[in-house]
Image 1: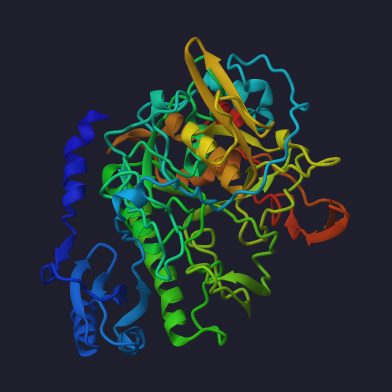
Image 2: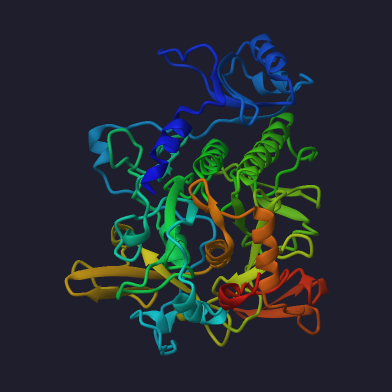
Length: 550
């Protein structure tokens, strides 16, 4: 979409962002994002100064200041002002290590949405589809994508933003649909955390800012291939193999997703005309964000308020500019309508987790943010996956996410097969020196002299891109010419996604018992066939999306 070059340049200049006093060249204290109420910018700046801080920049689009703090109670002092609605540390800026450290072996982190894959290559079904590994894609057959590919592969005028750990744009099964010109990386690698513990590991480049076609985790690459791996005679096909992928990176190599990069990614998506964004993550460091939890300090409460407020503003900004928002629901096996305990927060820095009581006033962001379509995960039998979060108000639709435990024993082939960066698999020891997979959780496919790698993963992170691909089919069919190519109002996309989903009732009895490693796990499904906590409005259906009448 070369016609967007001017739009991108304008977005990069960020006309809606006004600059406060220039950033000093000398070292500063920690930086914070200070979110202010409507018309509260000047008062918030005064609050920053009164607390001994300095305002560095103002983001007028989303209504927050970037400020450097002074003193141990800077956050609490600023947050006490009536104009301030939330204060969060800005953890997005990394730093470079010495050349020797940078050359050391990188530790590959685990991203949100991942569970272990189990070696077992015996279970896969042959398919008439043209791609060599299509027989392993039970997920595509479940939603009719194998048939939809031939009828409506998707339009190249549809831009799908993958907000994740990055995308391997050189992978043979992604490269044909990868839009390098529009892709952006809003993350700087951070080798170590504030306590000196390894975070992202050594930087690969001197700037510690990875190229836009790189993914050092593998999570984002897997997601991207599920959405739009092309039909090109190698590997797999995505749900919408004709649309374009735009990498809008917001995740660290270690799998953490902090607030500022997420805000930047969503704003950028809205500015350049992206049609859909896939968000297979939650914003760190809080699994559940509570604004008034007695177990949290005032500083922690202000941070969670900033995450809720800031993300909602960014999501609204993107949605008002035509971006359909799709998110993974989460992998805690939790009824999000009745949460009780959070043992995972704060997840950063490492070692800070505590157990606290939570309730339905606490939210997972962005899965429970307004305007977001949240996706529950299914196993190959069609049941809700054991790990998938659920909830009558929270699950909007469901899609294949994989479940290695959905059946007798554990099998990797019950998970979702997606593209994997070769260097990530090598670093993890999943392929040998000759490039051959060491277990059934990794698959290699070659076409002539070109070889590509794939891995099986479980998670609602894998479910969400199936829904995103179906949404891309709908925009390809019903979208009208607009900014970025085609556009279709997010409310219309949502309505069509629900209309084409296949309704699925709660199991009988509603108290569904999962068998896992000799233990019984009971989860309760609420709602009716049209909309319930396990399956939402139903299982997304690519074939119906490709054939439904307007």
